[in-house]
Length: 115
Image (cartoon, rainbow, N blue to C red; front, side, top):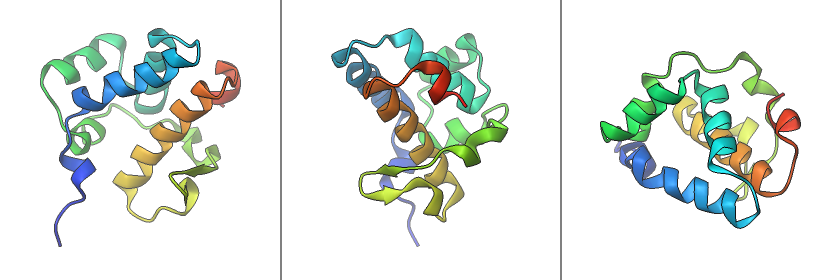
């Protein structure tokens, strides 16, 4: 069975889309970075290094220092799929990130997003 296309997509290609989505709604790149670092355990420098290395999503999450222990509290729908119901662990992490960025763009307070 072949890998889903998003797994081999470069994180550095999707990251600017996350930032654009947030900025269109009056949020900042720093808030996007804060969310990504909270979820993955990367430092700001570690996040920048991953982008410089042209890491794909699979490698990005495999090399993540630590996935936040509260990810199980992330609930909701992204692209018509409930994030808590996604069976593939890697896809679920990607959907968690999508959901957090969606919440940011919808105007939720950062302290509510980062449970």
